[in-house]
Length: 234
Image (cartoon, rainbow, N blue to C red; front, side):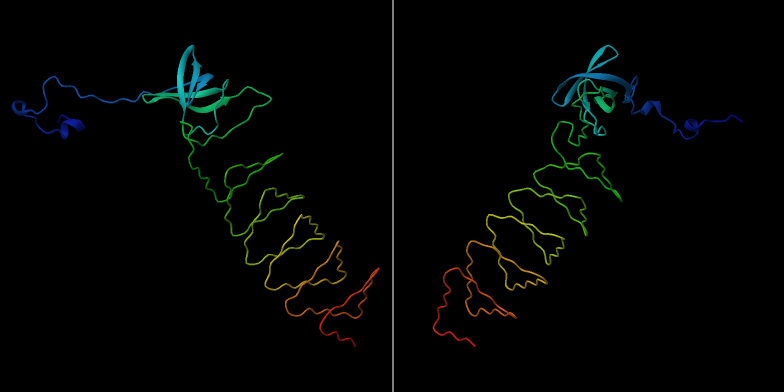
């Protein structure tokens, strides 16, 4: 028994008298050509890099998967396709005094886009300095912990909005040109000594002002004046 291959077993008989396929017609098969190579960046024009590879000049754009921003004199990996030539990786960068490794998450044409890093746990480590810059910086956490030997906030205006603020410090030093506080009720408790030094002190109460002490001493170099409709002592 003669064995049939799969195409013969499932092929339907064709009627040459009523054939819808024109004689001599050859279907066109789209083939994707992919070649990998390496090259050196010699110049950049906008979003395209001029690259010298195996003695020929190529114009390539950065692939989306290439996160490290290519620079002139970098040796890069190239992928040549029907859609163009792409830089997929930065393989070698000559050492420079001002060399900076930049992770470029913008689009291939240089326009900005949103980037998301998703991980169960993310840790950033910097041996010297960790710096972030932008027009806006936002954090949203259930708990935030900042720990350091010195923390400095520098800006034109600092705004805080909290249901409750708890501060604890061994020493609190504050310097202002003007200090203004508004509160519905204020309670200050000092267990030891409360000392105030000022060029002039003015206290004003709309209803009642009460001072209580075990002993009260008023010392003035010149005058002590008490003025009121009625003064009661004793």
